[in-house]
Length: 177
Image 1 (tube, rainbow, N blue to C red):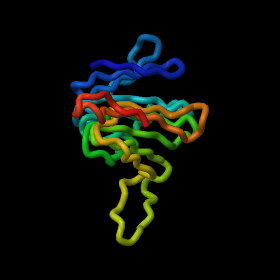
Image 2 (image 1 turned 180 degrees about the vertical axis):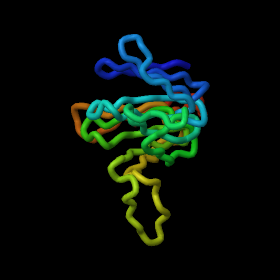
Image 3 (image 1 turned 135 degrees about the vertical axis):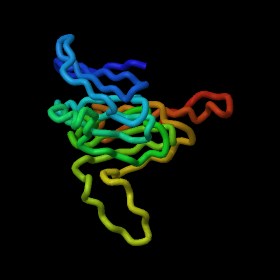
Image 4 (image 1 turned 90 degrees about the vertical axis):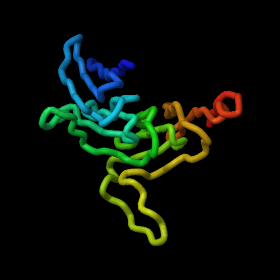
């Protein structure tokens, strides 16, 4: 798999098998990040509000946020933060069009998670409730099978549509929520 996403004059591409992330500008590779993840990369999204922030999702069940200005350390990927709130491969990541620090992630575990990277490290301790992963502030658990895609509505703030393979096991199609 080799996928591409772009913003302004930059293009991001990644090859799934090797955890490879490349950033191009006008047909020239600017950055080459080996081992951006510990497994295959499945998705990438560039923040429209901050051209330095890049999200990647992987078969290692995590989402990683990179800063374009500081992508590698000692020759391997050096994320700003690693978001771990899924128990299966992350299939889709997307920044929120309404707030620069918010993004969503969808995975094979059937969850659509909404994160705020400004909340990382600012967890609130609650009694009798297990702690949530750092930065996670909403988890949609309405699907019964893997969430294969989702999109933010750019015309209706804080509205998301998600698609899953719920009906696949019973011979039907997926569901749209």
